[in-house]
Amino acid sequence: MKQLVLRCFSLVLIVGLACLWVMLGAVPAIAAIDTVNYNNSDLKNYDFSHADLSGKAFVAAEMRNINLEGADLSNAILTKAVLLNANLKGANLSGALVDRVFLLGADLTNAIFEDATMTRTSFDEATVVGTDFSNAILDRYEIAKLCDRVEGTNPTTGISTRDSLGCR
Image 1 (cartoon, rainbow, N blue to C red):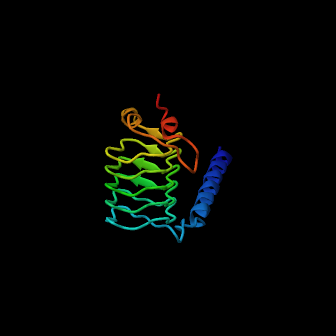
Image 2 (image 1 turned 120 degrees about the horizontal axis):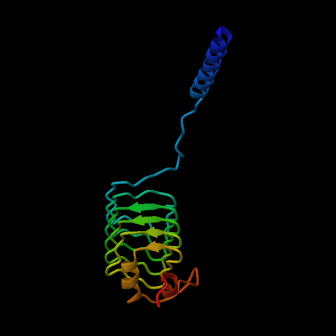
């Protein structure tokens, strides 16, 4: 009996020391040097044309009249952002999270939203010509509203806007 208690105690001690060794040897994660987030920023009238903003975060950013023409916003996070009258001509938003965004009056001519998640996003009065929504996730009612007015073919991907939305 005494030997069993001694073995159990030894096992608990070894496991405890191993856990302590692992915890003391842990190295904290270090953010990448070029990490920039624009969360809660006032970016009204900013010019980010042709900028590499891939993977950047724009959560709850005020982006009225922003110029993102030709910008690379692939895998970016635009949640709760306000992009009223924004210029997104030719912008690449492939794989981006565009959730709860107001694109009222935005120019999305030839923009690419391939594989983007665009839930609860409003496209009212946006210019949607040659925009590629291939494999993007949009709310059904927004797709129906867009299908009533979209046109064109994206010059980069060669996909028609109507086909990318699945319009009938």
